[in-house]
Image (tube, rainbow, N blue to C red; front, side, top):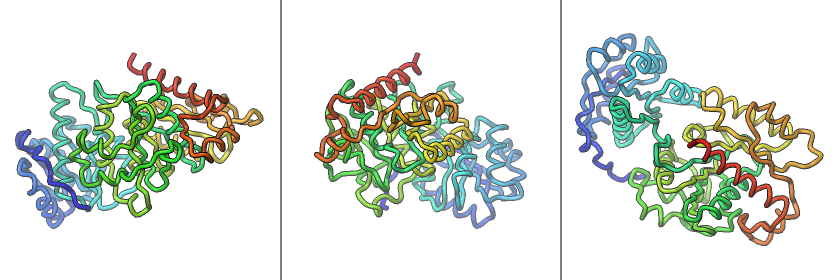
Length: 401
């Protein structure tokens, strides 16, 4: 996709000193060609023997170190981890030729400032380095050096709705939560549909809109209130919704950086940002889990749902994300179900914050007649959803206490 010209962020910082650790001379030269597009970057050293990384970092005094994952004799991830341990005042970025959730998780756990997957553009690399430099400067100055996307003081609350099993009612829960929060906090709630392949929050909110998140694909680094106003689809009580792409072809190509830019921008202007996510585990889902004030895991009271979501919780634990930010929504609960709230809490090791009863009659009434979840009539279902919204608001509010 065609990216806009990079904002001259480099003019706002002094020259950033870089140490390059690459596989060989050819690889280092490719990095240099990309770096040439950002004038404020200054190479202070380059090596292909990763065993000398710490020595060179101490001698060259870089602000940021770029490490290729495939370097030898010490693998790039191990080099990056050691740099973060030994020289915490230096920014560290890992660059890989190929990736999986495992390498991304390792990068997060090690506290790296960014993880990039080749091929990467000169703009993307330059922005990543400048962000890493900014975070290092913040830490050095005694300010909060939060990871990209992590909430800073004064921002709103990010509530990510997730499930590892399709058909759990995750999108219904996300749309219902956003609608109920908007009813109590008009103009202060956004809903972002990051279920790129099968997003359908528009169906549950009875919304129509031509613009989707794909409309932002060339401007993620240039977001403004005017741009977002053109893309938002408005729901009841001024709920502002960013819809998922309309087709599978439009659902491809979004990066963690893209989503991070959007999430940060929206979260700065809203009290609550609700995020609907895909059911498969990928880098975007993991980054949303990382940056959330609260994660709602939507679970059905059946063995398949329990087993699938247990795997997602394992990822969450492996990444050492705070368990007190993870809560379960038990959806489609029936009186005769053997798996009740207590058993699910015991199985997962986290709290069930809401139980939504199964209510086919009410669901069919509003879906078949094109009504929004905001208009569900008084029923067991609406009462459960209201209680869920109250519980969520109470939990994220208590986090500030």
